[in-house]
Structure formats: structure tokens, C-alpha cells
Image 1 (spheres, helix red, strand yellow):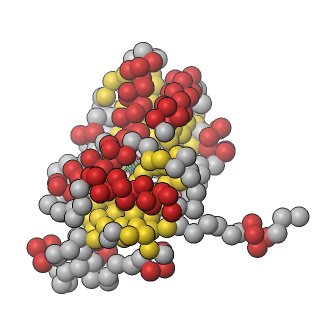
Image 2: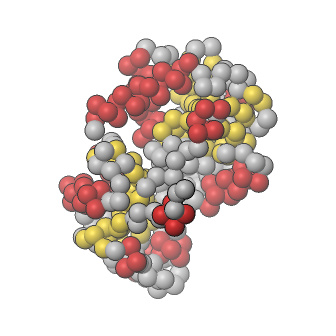
Amino acid sequence: MANPALATQKPSPVCWMNGQIVPVEQASVSVFDHGLLYGDGVFEGIRFYNGKAFRLQAHLERLMLSARAIALEIPYNIEVLSQAVEETIAAAPTKDGYMRMVVTRGVGPLGIDPSRCHSPQLFIIADTLHMVSERVRSEGAKVIIAATRRLGADGLDPRIKSLNYLNHILARMEATHAGADEAILLNSSGRIAEGSADNIFIVKKGELLTPPVIEGALDGITRQVVLELAEKLGIKFRETPLAPYDLFTADECFLTGTGAELIPVGYADGRKIPECPGAIYQRLSIAFKELVQQEI
Ligand code: PMP
């Protein structure tokens, strides 16, 4: 019989903070950090396979742009950050895992004004990955359309991957409450934006469709990879606004994200998606795995 004490043991995550690897117990930010007080900061979620970060350059570029958009000066350049990522992976408890790079505004007096925060904090955590369940991979995720809306570009540009996830969290709570796996957020016009932590694709009459980023979606790295693969495989695709109707009447639907990769969707607000996992999803999913092998 398995030793229950061993079964519950989990390798500890590691953390790179301000220039070095530190034990996670010693990695901390101040209670006066505006990242904590106001969600003032940006982040990236990066996957590593066999000890190498996937699409690192794209993640670091997106981080730099998110930071520029909120006038947050990252105290390191891309080369230093790439090296920090390598060091963190080398110290990580696993060769295949997930890392989180976070930049906060740093310590400042109480009050939202960032002009008195003079030292942004940067840390990277590498950990094992919380895998998507086998049930979801084989039968497809159940999604709901959340009542909570995605903020539009007139509120917070969806391209900024900021530390403000509260409306995504509220949407995810709705999904959990409804017994579903994921929530789809609509924009303020009632069109589909994205999942709480993933982008959405549907397939209709053999064509792959996804909302343009301006509809309220993060410019997902996995989304970009899927569009690249669709092009390569000769799958017709289009970025186009989508209504809930398009989701309810889709032939196939799937979600994309760094942690989840590609996940098929089986039900949308109780409507069965007829092809799950569908043929186009399967082609793209295989091509995605092959691409990871090639690039790693
Ligand atoms: N949308 C949101 C809101 C997300 O948090 C994520 C995960 N980073 C995604 C989409 C998927 O983006 P990516 O493929 O870059 O992980």
C-alpha cells in the first residue's frame, strides 16, 4: 500500500527574487507593496517543458509591453530576465512545470498614487503544474457564460496582463457555483471576450473562429500559436466578433492557455457541443505537442 505520508509530499516551489534564488519561505513582499494593496503590477505565466521555457521571448515581450502601458519600469532587461528564468528552472522541483513572473509597483505610502513607489519588485516562482483533469481532457470542459463582464479597453486594456483579476475570479466563482469547469466572460456589448484564464475558439462549418483581442481578450501566447498552426495546417481561420449564439451553435469549441494548452469544451450553458473532442481541435492539439517538442 502506498505510504500516505509520502503520497501527500509535494516538492517545494522555488523563487527568484531581486537577483537570486531564495527559499520560498524567505521570499516576501512588504505589506506596503502597491501590488498587494491595489493590484498595481503585471505578470506572466510561463510553461517549461524538459527544463526549457516555451515561447519565452513572446512572454517577456508581453510583460515589457504590459509594464510600459502602466508606466512601470522593470528594473531588468530581457537578457537578465531570460537568464533569471533559466536559473529558476534549474532550481525548480521539476523539469516540466509552470512559472509565474510578477512585477509589482513596490513599496509606497498608503494611497493609490504610484509616483512615490520607487523600487518595483520582481519575483519568479516555479512550481509543479496543476494538471487539467482527465475527465475534462476526454469529455470536454463544461463552461457557463458568466454574469460578470470582462472590462473593456475603455476600462483596462485587455492586452495588459495586470495583477487585477477580480472580475475573472468572480466569473470563475460563478462557474464553480454552477458546477462547471470554466466561465466565459462577455464584454460590455454582450459579445464573447474570453475564458476566466484562457482564450476561446469555436469551429463552424470547418472554419476556426476566435474573437479579436479588442473584444476584450488577452493577446494569449497559446492563442497566437494556435493561429500560427492553423495557418500552417491550412485550416481556414478568422478573428471575428462572436455572440453567445455562435458558441451555442458551434460544431466544436476549445480553450487555450499556457497552463491548460488546448482544452476541448463539451457543454456551453447546458447546450451540448456536438463534436468534442472535435477533428480540428485534435489536429491542432497534436500539432501543438509536436511544436513544443521541436522548440524545446
Ligand atoms: N486570458 C486570460 C485572462 C489569461 O489569464 C490567460 C492566461 N495567461 C489567457 C487568456 C491565455 O493566455 P496565454 O496563452 O498567454 O497563457
